[in-house]
Every structure is written in C-alpha cells, then in structure tokens.
Amino acid sequence: MSALLAAAGSLEPAARSYLSPTGQEIVFLLVGVLVLGAAVVSVTTRQLVHAALWLVVALGGLAVEFLLLTAEFVAWVQVLVYLGSVVVLVLFGLMLTRAPIGRSPDADSGNRPAALAVGVASAATLVTLVVDAFRSSWIDLSGPAGTTRLTGEFLFSHWVLPFEALSVLLLAALVGAIVLSRTKDDRAKPRPGNLRTALTKSKER
Amino acid sequence: MHLAYPAVLAVLLFSVGVYGVLARRNVVLVLMSVELMLNAVNLNLVAFDVWLRDTLHAGQALTLFTITVAAAEIGLGLAIVLLVYRTRRTAAVDEVTALGDRHEADDLADAAKEQAAA
Image (cartoon, chains in turn brown, orange):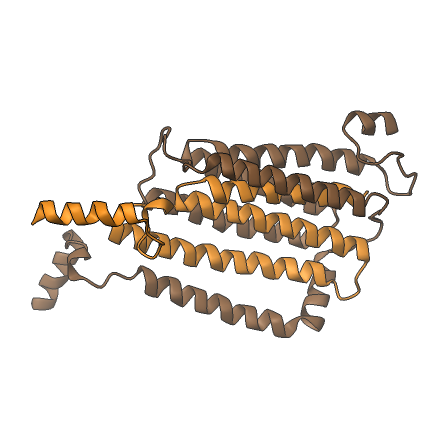
C-alpha cells in the first residue's frame, strides 16, 4: 500500500497504519487529479461553453471529495446548488451575452503571463506552507461527521440565527437581481404575439 | 486520511482560480473562476471540520453558508453582467473602463477623435 501511495505522489514519508483504510486516500488522490485537471482546462480553454461544462466536472468531483471526507449533506448541497443552479446560471449568462459557440481567440486578456506568474507563485508558496504545517496531521474518518441528521441538528440548534440572516440575504439578492435586470424603456418590450393580440381584442370587446 | 491531501488540493484549486480571475477576459468566465476559488475554500473548511471533530461543526455550517452566498453572488453578478452587456454591447472586462484610471495617451486619442468628429 505504501509503495502504491509513493508511486501516486504521496506527500507523507511513511504511511500511517491507522484503522481508517488508505484506500480512501487513493480514491481522494485520483478524484483530486480529475478535479484539478478539469479546473485547469476550465480556466484555459478557448471554447467558452466547454469551460462551463468542465466546471461541472470540477464541482462534481469536489462533491465526491466531500463524500470521501464523510460530509454527506454538504456533498449533496454541492450537487444541488452548484451543479443544479450555478452552472445553469453561468450557461445562461454565456448565452445571453452572445458567447461564440466555437473557439474565441480573445477569451484570455493580455496579462496572461502575469496571471500565470501570480498563480504559480501563490501555488508554490501555499503548497510549501501547507505541506510543512500539516505533514503529520491525520484525519480520523471513522464515525459520522456530516450525515443529514447530524447536519440538521447542529444547523438548527447552534446556527439558527445565521441561517435566518442568510435567508434574508438570499431574498435581498433575489430582489436585487430582479431590480437590476428589469428594463425601463418601452422599446425593449416584446411585440404582441397571437395570444396577446387575441387577449387585447377580447378586452376591447 | 492525511490532512495534507485535501489542504494541498484546495491550495492548488485556489491558485487555478486566481489564474482564471486574472487571465480571463470574459466576465462570465471570471465569475466561474471565482466559483472555483470559493469551492477550494469549501474543501478546506470541510477537511478542517472533520479533522478538528468540532462539536458545533462550524466548518460544515460555514460551508453551507458559503455555498448559499456563492449562489446569491452569482445571481447578482450575472444580473450586473447582463446590464453591462445591454448598455455597452460587450462582456469583456478590459473594455469596461469608465471608472478606471486613464492614461494620457487615451485622453489625447479621445480628444483627437472628438476634433475629427467636429
């Protein structure tokens, strides 16, 4: 097992022989590579709609990672909210701003080398820091940590007030989005179709 | 499971998001990169919550709140993007420069354009 881990790029010098099986770590690593690759393709591809679809792969892989970390409810919320609504919203945004379907040469701005430098620098710094800090830390995955029952209990016994405040925030965001996207000029109104003309005629009658 | 795995994955994902935010030109793609960064933070929160065995489960509660705030953020962000697209006919971040710091060369070019129009 340890040889396999070392071949897969294990960051740990010696595999800990805990009760938790290290098979979870292997699955975590494989899904992590998938997530990272999908994320990289999503931020580098020149086809805008493909970027949104690769984002689906990355976010779905992250839901699997949450499941592996025994946070079940968070994983399903991730699937429902991110894969279900956020990606659909992003796709709608791409369509409504008339994103080209094929390759668009101007998907990246001119400061791409600077962005690459900043990204690589932050990755190097943070990886060094994190590996140095948590090299010998071990997550005990035995026992439920995030089942739906447990999540409901802690959410509605300790976190009720933030939860309610968050619902008010969501309502405010909803109203704000409606106010922002409402058109004020009359020219943008849709022309009357068959149904509408029939309705106005019946009203006139 | 070693804590280093989720922590390193979150760090790398965050860096990919940083690169996307800085390098992308389309506003919707920038918003997608912001989502990637938020998700990296979510992974960190869940991993540390499971690691610390917190009785309040602050990490998972905060993850749920982050997901909600991200949903609100993307809704409002896309509304603003659509408004900008309707008024400016563009979705490129480097063309929306009305509030930006202007170079003198741009001012001179604009003045020349106005003179040519007059």
